[in-house]
Image: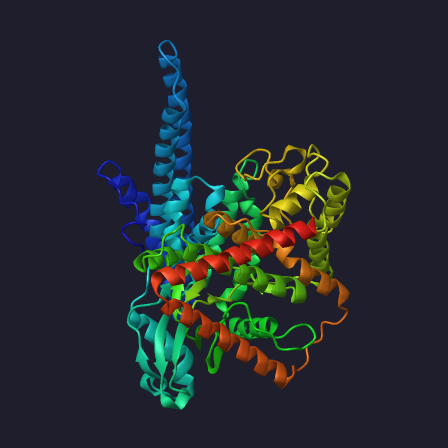
Length: 576
């Protein structure tokens, strides 16, 4: 029972062989199974066989597409070699001609890869998101082609979604769909590899408020786990090739983490824990969260359905279109202020979660980061989280302080201190790596403001002198931590902002290393009231500025930007 695409039909030349040697054994096997097994046993065997067959087909399809792309690069290399020989008698190929040739090749490879992923979906979409989150580390053509996989992909019909909700959430409660949902959006807000999300309004019984409903795709777990196994095999083949990231280590870590992504009850618990981390410091005092994270509706959570707060806004992947529609210039004052606010919000959120608790969001990408209507930054999708132990986060804090307190980028004493701290992250260097490899890796991970790396290391991850190439392999605990730090670094590069995580995290690192207590207690009501007043004041100030006439608004925002840049410059001067 295979689809026409999966079944290779016989041609006229081999139809006799097909009928004589293939059909009879299959028919005999089917008859034996029919006589010796129950219906349930046959169905289980059939389901397992179909799943295995689908995995083989998907693996072969993706591997053939990759092989086709690699073959095209080899062919292009040979073509260029002979072209250079042919034209050397008249003139050499210009740099522009060479770049145009490779740009066309990259465009072909990116288009082939994008079409393959679009057809196959599953975890291949997640892999595309990982690669696309670092547009500065891959050719532009690939970055543009893979950027489409951050949001809506292959949405399921709303009828299927409602059936899953009824089966998973309502039947056991003895409720009808209309008992819970007063309104339910037909078009999904987003559709990812594991689940898709719909906007809804709850009935009066459940609070009569707007919510987002996350529903897991039917029978998706086996498919995704098969995909990640396939990608691991492909990545293992290319492990010796000069790639900017050790994708084998990445997919190996994700294989462990993604298992939790199928349990929405665990995700709801992670959302609640993250909310507590961001709104309560290590001493139990209330604080204002740098980002907005949704919270679940406890009564409406199951393993495959999660009802949560609805965040009004657009994903970061669509923010540029939103700015264009509002007439905001990409290099204007408003865009620069937005970039700094985005970086500050994410940096603080990751700093608190990584350094203070060791529990952090492990799947941040432009599709999960939201720009809310009120100007705040939101973060969704807590299916993938990571927990590191106290010793590890204290080691990260020591690396941060060593970076922040260095006198210069080439001072030997500072480089040794940074390197010694970084060794505690279980990073092993290759035998031929230059002496300050650990220090260079720390700078690459945590400081995007470095202009000159030690020992001739190059910030460009595509370079053979990249600090990443000095590692024997990427430590598993560092994989998802690096995803978070490198994401912030990539966003800073995209917006043209000089940004140092080590400088921003240094106050948090000092506080963590001085604190001996991780116990969280109830904060005071007075502190909570002050935070609410502060938040209210910020929102009012933002609204007032937005209502100002164009010229006056531009002057005010320019003054704010100059103040922020001046403050950052002073902090850099003080730290050095």
